[in-house]
Length: 401
Image (tube, rainbow, N blue to C red; front, side, top):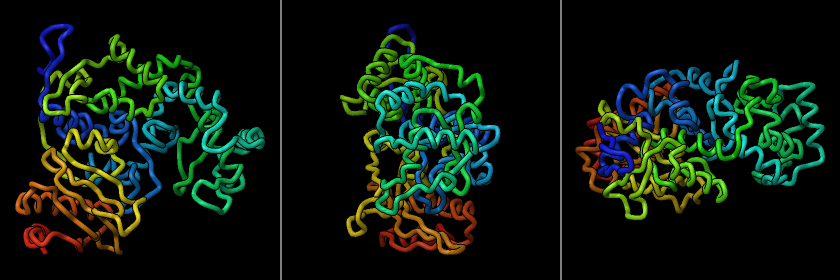
């Protein structure tokens, strides 16, 4: 048992102990975290980030794969988008898939948007007309209401797209499934269980309960980690402070030796402290948007790994590649792979190991991760392109080529 012996005491954790608790909470250590498949995984994580980029697969698929192994992709999709609804899309850390039972907890954010009356765009006069169209003809996609784009840059949305997204932000409509990666919008009152719609928790209750969810998902987290998980504004972050200090969030204070002094004071899920983490570590490639690594400051603190997505960096300034996926092995982030697919071949455009990881130690896990990912996406060959000369021989042997 890791819990402190008396009330009011702050438990001291080593950085290795904190890292292992985090890995178990995130589903990368031990068999228990993989039970229940993708639906249970979503509830343990609390939020799965969405992104439009698709290399080996879209990020929400990769998040499940990295924890569960070569699970069927249709099973993953059904865990997120099914009928009746198991999940909904909304704003948490970013645009995320969230467990359906957490709908009431985002009331505070829907209220904020309604009061602000602005998102990224001015709300068009057509918003009531679009809502009526959904009421009369829904469920709908943007194609059914006039299209999403005006033909300009990424954020040059049509008025109908602005209107439907505003209705999503404020909770009049909801997305509980997708078709061909397009959101399907329906009235919240039609798509969601009545008992969830009937709940109207206060901002304090919303933030308190979400802080508990974030703390459970992260295992061990600083205040900044929790605020980042939920992307809270300053007034809401004050509510988080209050629920941490008065104990209503259900998290306990810990101090992590080896973390920078300003981050050593943290909070932990008490259930995660009851037993030491044990079991087999996953060896896998991670989506850059995975909740284990989506916070750069936390990833550096926990793993000593400087993580950066370079998809939006000009090509000539990229260091590791377009969609670099961290390599997790033995509970450490030991390398990076920039993947692609060419027919039945998984192509590692660029691979590298972290400083201090020898070719002899890293080649085996790297080959294991590449072959497992290849099989999952239907490839029967692996080709490596750019690689450190010292890694060429060991990786060639480990891949069995």
